[in-house]
Length: 147
Image (tube, rainbow, N blue to C red; front, top):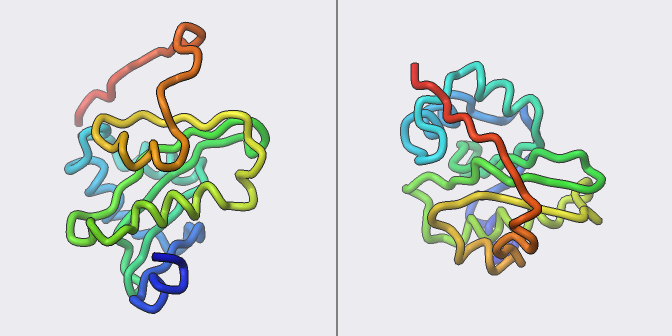
């Protein structure tokens, strides 16, 4: 489906942070996601404030999210991508990815990265693959302490 097809069915994607349903986002990330269980509300607020957020909506109700952490010049990290179970299987994740990668502020970047445990097939369709030079990458990983 394309923008027009989704729009006819009441779906929209917006980067307007005023539209975000913080409680839905927080509940999903802290209780349902495998990557941020136990995250605090303060951390979620800060993550939203410091990212480009793409909210997915159905007739005005938020049903999905993706965040992009970026300098808008060379690098972007895609994270917290989800569509609620009730709306999966409709192609919304693909549409969300097309929207993100087509966003005017995210053009010409040298590198996009993400981490996923289970959605490799989705991201591969958009050009993501294993790190080109994994030996060049290092990280500090500090799991969140649960409340």
